[in-house]
Length: 261
Length: 250
Image (spheres, rainbow over the protein chains, first blue to last red):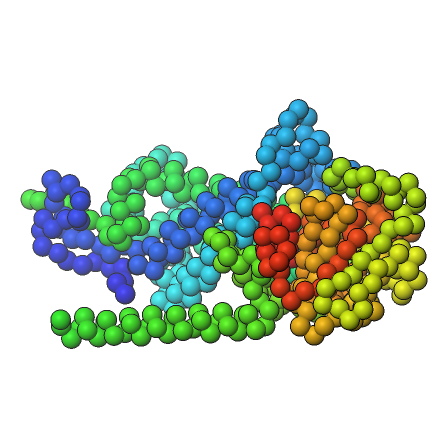
């Protein structure tokens, strides 16, 4: 398997399909094949989970805390949207079509593929030290000075330099680790806590969260956090250079652009 | 052909053979141990089979959570019910005195039970949660007769694999495997929170499976059939509405 690292190639040898007016002096193997493949599989699964999740929420856009909640009980909050069920008091005079059947099938299928892919990624990440080498922030970067410098760079919307194309900065590293080790496990846990069969085998999975409706509400908020991550992630890819970053995540390679002297 | 590519070809071939063989063995084992749901075909078959197989392995004997009296939801929420047909209305007018539960199929002694007969059997009361696939839920005290008791009375054949249960509405039926049918918390409920089961909650007789979502708990049950295959029922996918997953433990 190709490992990330610098590979010296003859001058002028570019990436297939790239514009060759700018010469490359070297090509960096930026993302390993396993990272790229798992990235795109999980991207597809996430989009499927998002669409099907929205459809499922539409059938009951009310949220509660604790064990129980239904049309007769007070809500924690409601989404100001119409529903696909006539009995839900939404204030809208119409009912949306019921999409829960295929949405539930798709939600679990995508969840299974995402979780299995995630497991492969985790094993790979520890075995090859991907997490330690590419994602764990350096101690120096985690100081206030390091962090504030990184935040200031982001707030000025500065395009990242060559180092930014070849490695992750401290904010990226922290965010990716948070998504991988906090948000994804939480969204899986809160999801399983809504399975009546799963909680019959592992009751603590739901009681620790404060009940079935708490689990559902938390699942919604963790999903929102993941959606926020997706939006910011895509925005940053666009700001940093959409085509070069996409090329890196598809082909694995980053060209090093240096002026020929 | 170079040595390298030949070796690659052989390795790939062996891996593919092992993969296909492994998949075949896994399928055979899954079939033997009842880990394949009736709706395993189609584009969502993978997720559906993984749901069912993993939960069967993990939850075959586990008990749904039961709650203290203080957690009972008041009043119990009654979801929408389909329009009730004339047969139902006639039985309702008679106080459900003529309501019959017919049990047939792979049984030694096919029989019909009145509500009075069902109430004379050892009853079970449990405070469990009813959770709908839409997201809402409530807790109630359900009283009824365990399905396993009825199955013992009629004597099921050893090759029985599913129980198909029908509502008085001919277009509403569903089915469960034997693990769920024999589970101590699966029962035919006729009481709710100390009263007779209201029509809005599925009265006079409702299948109750607290380890699966609400849509498996079919209302107004009049008929059970014991079978070894779901092929002859509807589209063969296990329920009258196969747009929804057959296994609803998740």
